[in-house]
Image 1 (cartoon, rainbow, N blue to C red):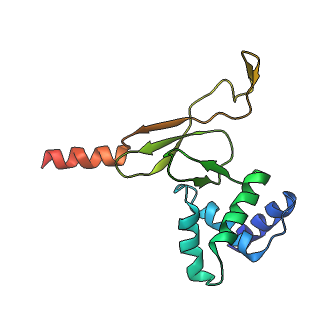
Image 2 (image 1 turned 90 degrees about the vertical axis):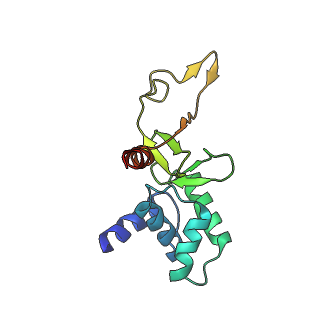
Amino acid sequence: MITNIHKLKNLLKTKGLKPTYQRLKVLQYLDKHMDEHPTVEAIYESLSKEIPTISMTTIYNTVNAFLEKGLASAITITGTEVRYDYITSHHHHFLCKKCGRIIDIDIQCPIMAGRKKRTHGHKIEEVHGYFKGVCKDCLEKVHVKAKH
């Protein structure tokens, strides 16, 4: 864990951010929970147990600084909440309509693979691919129930 904190501290410094205790804890949380794509509320709920003086404003400000510096990306797949992703490389997301999980999926996109950055005269800077359906875990639960 010490080496991970050291790595995160260096990462913040290379991005021009002062490695404060709160920033380190938020970045550590995002790193540890990257599969969950947490909301600010989830981050706050967890960290406030360890740091009772931390505020929602601090979490929002920290996450916004991470977005500006490319340390995290925002996901608005549901339209009702923003979730945060520590994986900033290009990838798509799948929302399970049954359990609500957001799952990273890797689908090749020629635009973001560098082959084509312009289309119809427009400069493409971001591509977001969101897929919705039922995840394999939820499908398996339905299949198991059907057998019994």
